[in-house]
Amino acid sequence: MIAARPFSTPLSPLAAAVAWFVFIPAALALNIDRLTPEETTLHRSTLQALEPLITAKKQDGTANLLTWEELYQPLSPEQQAFLDAFRTLRGRQLGAPSHYFGEADRPDLVPVGPQQTVKDGVATPLDPQVLPRNVFEAYRRMMEAMEKDLGRRLLVESGYRSPAYQLYLFLFYMSKHADSVKETNRFVALPGHSEHGYPPRQAIDFINQDGINGEDHPEEFEALPEYAWLQQYAKEFGFALSYPRGNALNTAFEPWHWHFESSDK
Ligand SMILES: [Zn+2]
Image (cartoon, rainbow, N blue to C red):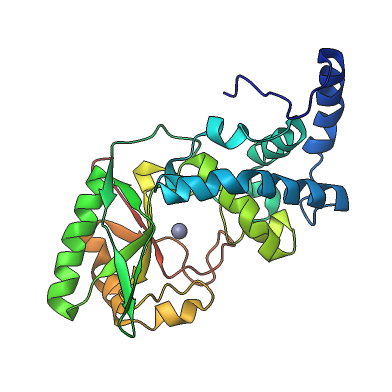
């Protein structure tokens, strides 16, 4: 829970209480088809207020572990209420009946890497990633097998992500989806709905060693020999494709996103 929500501008305690009380109903009425102009302004100012924090967390390699306290700290009460409104949303309200997993406790995490892609002789380091220990072991075994067969392996572009970081990503990507909560939800899960933040179904977004991740063109990843290999062998290592083409969850096709299914359920 969020204990302290200091106002960024000085207000008398009474004015603060009134502002807080008045704002809550507006935030809960979030327009999910397309943000209203007022909500769009609030959305932009929220992202702006978070930018220094996210930049710093990316620099020290801990963005994926962002806590709710860290996320709320730089925000005004209005911006915090805006975040709260997203946290109450459920996928089924948004036309995409994605699973609601809830917010699991942070598991025993181990670092992956350092990792880098190499294209035309130019090496690009990937952001630091972490995975639950058992998932990392399964991934490592799977990649040993892939390397034997193909002479290539896949890297982890995104592993575990905390629910707070998931919400930040949702807000960040909403600008790319016409400020529509509904549309964004087909591409980015809301917190509590993402396999990246749910260790019993931990997801990995793969990227190949040449830097192909399919983000803008899924068919590029789909065409990779690494993808064909995964389709044939991933299940032997406990991994499954979460969002095939035309999936019933109304989630976009994500050939790079595979989740681990623990065998000791
Ligand atoms: Zn993913």
